[in-house]
Every structure is written in C-alpha cells, then in structure tokens.
Amino acid sequence: MVDDDSMNDDDDDGDDQFDIPDNTKHITSIQLGQIDIDCWYHSPYIDTDDGSNEKNRTIDKLYICEYCLRYFLHNKNYRQHMNECNRRQPPGRKIYEDLNGLSVYEVDGNTSELYCQCLCLLAKLFLERKTIYFDVSPFLFYVLVESDKRMKNVQHIIGYFSKEKLSDEFYNLACLMVLPHRQRQGFGRFLISLSYELTKLEKKTGSPEKPLSALGQMTYKSYWHSTILTKLDEYRRSQTHATVTQLSMDTGICIEDVIQTLIDLQLAHTGTTIIETHYKQQEARDQRHHRRRQKSNGDYDQNDNNNNTLHSNSVLTIDEDLLHSTIARLSNENLSSKNDQHIFDRNYLRLINRR
Image 1 (tube, helix red, strand yellow):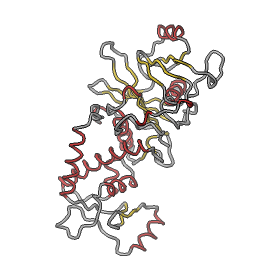
Image 2 (cartoon, one colour; image 1 turned 90 degrees about the vertical axis):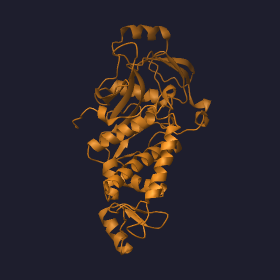
Image 3 (cartoon, one colour; image 1 turned 135 degrees about the vertical axis):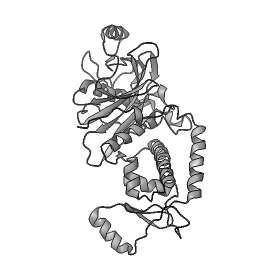
Image 4 (cartoon, helix red, strand yellow; image 1 turned 180 degrees about the vertical axis):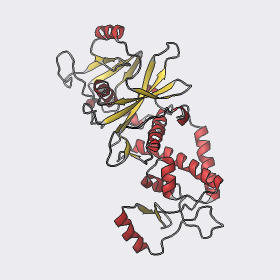
C-alpha cells in the first residue's frame, strides 16, 4: 500500500491535508540539519539510552543527523555527533545527477540496514499508515538529495521512494515521502518519473502498490495523464497505429492503469470510420468468445463509457481534435502550476546493470 500521505507534495490545493490528530504523535518537532520541522504522526523511535519506546511521554524536539539519519534526544549529544560524523551523502551508489544539483542514490536495505531503518522512522513522522520500519532487507530505497550551494560534497535529503526487490504483483513503488519543507516543488512527480524509468530499463511495466490514498491517486493520475497524452501525440506525429500493449511498454505504465487513464480522459472509443480517427480500435466480433479467451490467457479488459471493450490488443481510437484540446489544456495547467519546478531528466540517469 502506498502510504496515505506519501503523495501530498503535488496536486493539493490547500492545507486541508495538514489536519493532524494530536493524540497520534509523541514527538512535537525534529531538527534535521539546520531545519526545524513540525511532526505530523507518531513514529516508533527508540530511546537509545535505555532501549525503551517513548510512547508514554512527549518529546519536544528530536535531533536527527541529515546525513546518516541517526537521532538524539539531547542537543549536546547531537552536536558531538555532528563533529564526528564523516558522512555527507546517503550510502549506496549514485544513479542520477543533473546540472541543478539533484542526485539520487540507490540504497540496498540489506547492506545499509541501519540507514534504511532510520529513513523509515523519519518518514513515519509524516505518513499516517506506514507499517514497515525495521524489516528493510527486501527493499531498495531511492534517496533524492540536493547539493549544498556553498559546501562542496555536502548533500541535503529531500525525500525518497522504496520498492520491493522482487514483487509478485509487479509493483514499482511501495512508499514515497517528500519532507514537508520540500513539498509543492515537483519532487513527488520527479520520484514517480524515476520509478517508471527504472521499470522501463528492466523492460517491464509497473504500478504503485494499491490501494492509493486520495492524494496519491491525484498525483499518479496527473502523471499518467500527461505521460500517456505525450506518447499518444508522438504516435500521431509518426502515424503509428499503437496497441494498448505498446503504449504500456513505451511508458512503463501497466496495462490496467493505461486503460483506466484512456477511459478517464475519454480518449478511448470506437470510431465510426477510419477517416474519423487515426487509431482504429478493432471491436471483438464475438465478445463472449473474447471473454473466454481473456479468462484463459489472463488478459485484462474493461469497458469505456461508450461500452467498447478495451484490452491489451486493442488498437487505440483517438479523436485528433480532442487529443489536441486535451494536450493544450494540460499544457496551460502546467504553465500555471509551480509544481513543475524540478523535472526528472532521463538523460542524467546513469546506466544501471540490474541485478
């Protein structure tokens, strides 16, 4: 499950999502580097002095090293640690670095267990329903950082997403979190884009863990809409008659999400003539036969608002005028949005030899 508030740095219109029940948290705030951040939810941090969980009392401020993510109850111990800590960036290997100072590190939960556990504890302060804190070995963590503008080789954490190394459901994202002071700057979409680019490098398609929260659904729908519209426009320009399967493979978005997006955009329907459309969806001559074949082959199909059956082999029917108007509307929305400040650029993704 993608955590309930893991998608709230994009597509939110106000501060309604910050209505946080006070009785669920015991840490009032944290100091992360030079930044003070109010906490939203309870996180099961352990008192390193006596090994006890601090459920029964409120901690006004927890001090966290922004580089190794170790935490301290007392400022004195925190300052001593900062004088001794040699780390200035996440562990793991750097897989992305762009000209704007953004970098992403792939961190293995098995080889960097303590760091990943501390990362999950930090995330839980801002996620309502996160449940994985300590069993991090089955996961890879992709940590987004920004280089300090004054101090070379110093990088400040922005957020991360995690994914299972082996997912039977082909999920490509398990949890996503952007720190509160870096939200509404496009970093959530940046991480989602990265998750799909990694999926495409594996020559697979994927989807986030379901069910999505309401905010998560909004963020993913925005990504799916713009990505699929852009690809459809490419097909139109090259006069490619693409199937749902090809669209899925070209974007990395699983067939189920592709079909639902086409239906949401009202771009998937059966045209009456070839002249009317650039992409002709072939209707099944015998829908009962198709349903039997679908069940036996494990294919996915769904009906759109015009009662047309869409499945993996459907050739897309797109109204060109509607496609143009939808793309124009999306472009205007993006121009008026501040969320596109930080854009993922696949050209800066370093070649990865997958395990």
